[in-house]
Image (cartoon, rainbow, N blue to C red; front, side, top):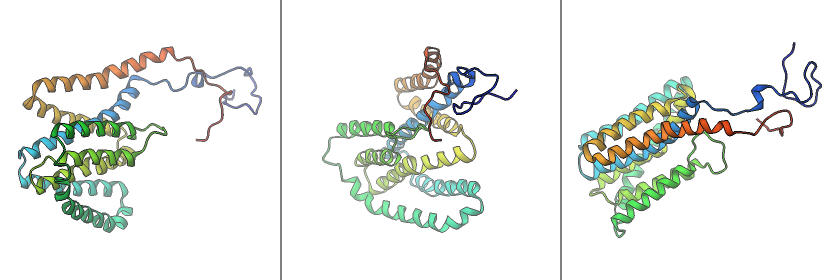
Length: 270
């Protein structure tokens, strides 16, 4: 017997007119794993913001050596280039010159504007700078792309807000070198890293945000544990709430779903 199809323009034998397959009757029912890995996209971006604050703390307190910062500045772009090369294969060599040119241009431009950015917000109170940066980062999360099709999603706007928040924090550093490295860190975390995340998710591992977020969470947890224990406890509870409690509540709330689907649905272009 032929299977039932979700159409209205044809009479389907052996099926009454009001028949609806269980597959379509209640669509979009998510499992706990779906909700868990879905919210991990949000925690991934949230942890990137926390990681920038950690980097800002280490740089502003001179806890990282110059050689280590230079190594990161050179090693991370090379690693990103290798990832793209593995994914693209032969097609990547055609764009290699453009990638190197853009990287050198960004480094030179960053080095040129870092002294200006360092003194840009000197007249603003430090508490106001930290509050404003936190507000900007919250807005960047609102407009960030977490895999949902929504009109409010705007990655360019989200990236620009994150960079603006970073510039506010850069005004608190003590030297032009610190300003440069913090600006490079900001550009890498909020512009380059999301693109790498999207590339790896599409080409290698769909759950990469969860694994990357786990690594970043470990780094942040170690830092908070050694710096301020109450904040470490708060951070652990925040991750438990986001990764376990919210998905569990979401999955349990689906039993109240009463929107049924069938041939009467409006046609949508896919």
